[in-house]
Image (cartoon, rainbow over all chains, first blue to last red; front, side):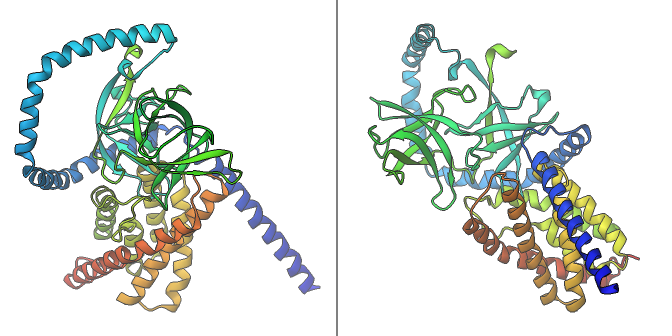
Length: 284
Length: 168
């Protein structure tokens, strides 16, 4: 009788544990979503620590920047000569720039395009920390809603696309890198060799080869190694014309119908210290 | 207690510094990477006679880690608490010395990666392959052993000086 009772109790415990696990997973399924907004207390704690981190990181950043400066010293004469040459060309470049702006406006009207890269202003920010848990690659930057940062804004640096803002508090924001393998947030891209332009989607990031995977391109389309990949502007999240990388490898899917294109990102995601957030000029 | 909290806060900030300057990410995991907060929580465990106070410390730092470094809610806290219970059992069989504390630290880091991997895969949030998980684990062993050993000597030094006393 006692044995039977113990057996039933054991069954109940197993059921309770099973239900508990399900409840925990359901809670995580909801709270781990990027759309979850930080509450008031979370924002305050996060902002306070971002401030502390900036102070703590300052001397390390100073040392790191000084080392980089010394490394760059050997190339300074060469860079100076190039810059001197470019200064002479500035007048011509400015005139060309005005002409190109006019052409862009005319083309926008003709093609019915709403926004291109020139319609955005850049807000510069410093990277405070990386996600320590690192299973989803995110960066914390030192600009937040007080600096007009909003969720969904695109983050770039001088070399190319970095990601987009996913969480915002008053004085800090979190940026999700494009290297995050999230099939729910595909980026529409264009592949160009100067003559042809083919559209595709970034399917994810291959952590083994350190390459982005682009899909949705028919096997009949011509893509070559070395072609440039940049945002197409389709989908409305990323403006067109932001550099992503170069094609390094082309394979086909298992049915031999579509191309799988491996792209080497132009940005080194291990070394991001400063970023720019794109803000549409007409949202002011 | 005050000294232990200072050690934990420094370790917590070290996570930010190391992540920035050793540039470790899933793409290029550095062999020196570790989770300093977790290692320090494991390292200070022998200095607690009061398990309730230790559990409160675990929960506070878990919550901070959740908010500051992961922007998650109770996710890391939950993992830290599970690790606490497992380490409590392991601690019964392993007496306190440098080798054993290193073993518990490495075990905790492995558990952290394993639990987060399984939960994130179960809720289908940004999944990554088993090979990446293994890479994460083996690349964090050296960093964990280094940080645990450094902390062990620091704690021993301050214990001898009389600054660090057991928490009752």
